[in-house]
Image (cartoon, rainbow, N blue to C red):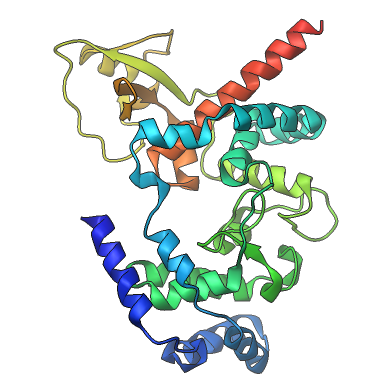
Length: 329
């Protein structure tokens, strides 16, 4: 039903005339807010916004998210051999820097690589849309989440030049307005991006230290536990208690879940806070114990399938890296 509602909104937006952003009553208020907060010239802000265009392809894309697929199909998008192989090469090519950043922030390097691998195929596909067009299109023409994207647009206009990869009207990214190899929204750039290379600016498109450091810092600021588990398979017995799980927040101990009929397939700390996720795999339901670090990945993207894809890609990459290193000794 949700997909049908979103499609209906997209169809409605398609039927709407191509009203310029400047004709929208919200522009004056937005410009006034940004000018007040930053001291930027209102005329320059209006000129910038007047150059933005509504893109129907953006409305089409947001109406068919990959997360609408079952896990068995979603997994095939991100756990391909090509993506794993490219991730291994990427890890080995940048191993020293990745491990330096990983040690500094307490985030295993393979998870930094996996985020970049899932988001942009290791920087190969960072998005073709003008960020300004994306945020104006969704902030003005997409009622279901207009408030969110309007706030992201405001944040973009308020960011100092030193926190962007270039002038605002030249930035490109995803259909949702995310930028760089790690696909940060403007508010994430503001709150979590770091100048890891120390050159006085944050560049999430051209600086690998900034890219790696920003992903790692994002994880840390959301509660990443250094050395902590992410996810582990669970095997339910015939009488396992049926659980209602709303999100990835750890809410039961492994010991409690075992008592309810879910056995771990590897040694786990009985007192570890965890959750239980059920995914529809190719061979039927899959049951997973998930931990705080899994929840942290869902703050990057709310989908449990997204977090599992990142986790499994990270594990696949580090398994090959370790095997190659062991073979060379």
